[in-house]
Image 1 (cartoon, rainbow, N blue to C red):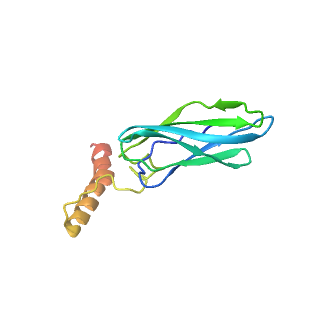
Image 2 (image 1 turned 135 degrees about the vertical axis):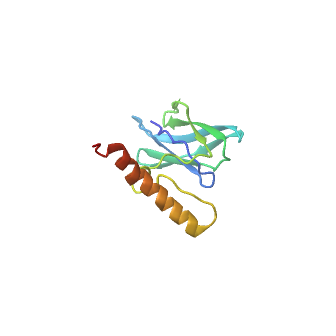
Image 3 (image 1 turned 90 degrees about the horizontal axis):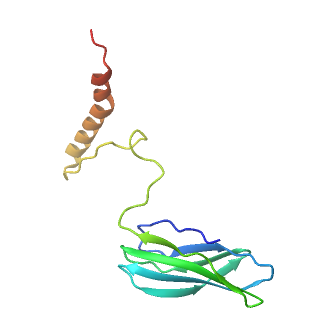
Amino acid sequence: TTEQHEDTNDNQTPYTITAFIVDDGSITNATLNYSLSGSGSGTGAVPMTANGVSYTANIPPQAIGTTIEYSVKATDNANNSTTGRMLAFDVTGTPPPGNGGGGLCGASAMTLNSGHLGLDLFATVFFNLMIFIGLPYFLFKRRK
């Protein structure tokens, strides 16, 4: 089984691909094959390093806008080989989703950046207070 690599905005570090390979004999060779499309082009084959049944290899970093398709080919001691399913991921200009930090999780709902630090700080605090305190007050205040 080959793990799906998530889309990434990282175009500086290699992309590690992991596959879990088992056989009733022994694995003599495992190769990561990949092809590039979009901003990048070409193909590559990288030998995988074994650690038990876990095999890893790195795809070199690629330009933003590149789609990377990859599969793993394994050969056993009886010279039987099999190729796993083709998987793909994109190198995008958009950061992958984070694990929080937005809305009411401690981050600003609105940030201003005019280049004037004092004004930006005041306006950001003011507008966020209006959003989180003023707006609910006016929406839910009791009418007489």
